Length: 115
Image (cartoon, rainbow, N blue to C red):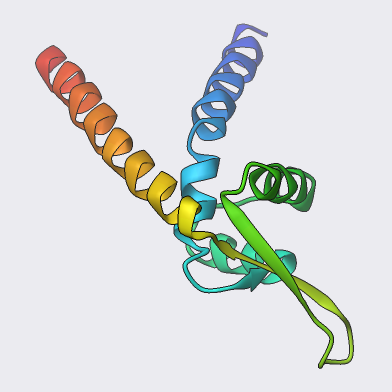
């Protein structure tokens, strides 16, 4: 029984860790326009599993914040809403990458110090 609790705790902690990286992961894939489903497939193929019920609210929130811009493509058989980084979003993305690098370096130093 204790292993199940440990697994539940661990899974929760991993989910929290992932939650902090999802924005950066999504932004990294929006230098070129993507529609929601294509972004899910692309990220999953690259090893970052993301579900629609996580992605779509995030895309809407980032668009409201001006980080993403969107446009509709109605040329195909099905209209699709595409998202891409706005000019403002490109700056935000670069700053997040720098922050990620700093955090990653500091945490790696802390972890390596323990070994």
